[in-house]
Image (cartoon, rainbow, N blue to C red; front, top):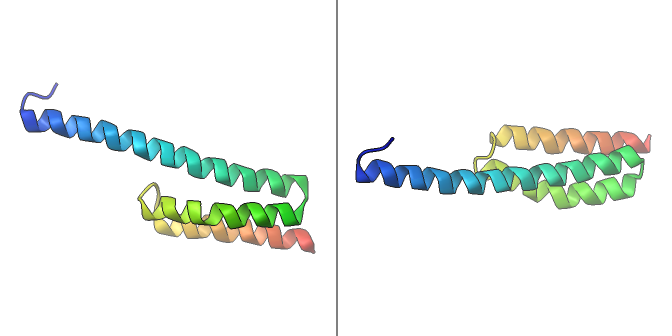
Length: 88
């Protein structure tokens, strides 16, 4: 257990930031899931619209440090490729 005042404050800050990060991570996963479901349904227009809405959320998560920025770009790129492949 923390003994010093600064260590106790650090624990409080960590708990607050962890809660924010957990909410952000959950939000990004929800948007990704919506795109995945639209792809699974076979509706290319709905999938493209879901990706258009999800892309800023995914990139914001990367910017905020939820995961590496290249992971965000890779996720968007792979989802877009899957949607594009639906047309052919």
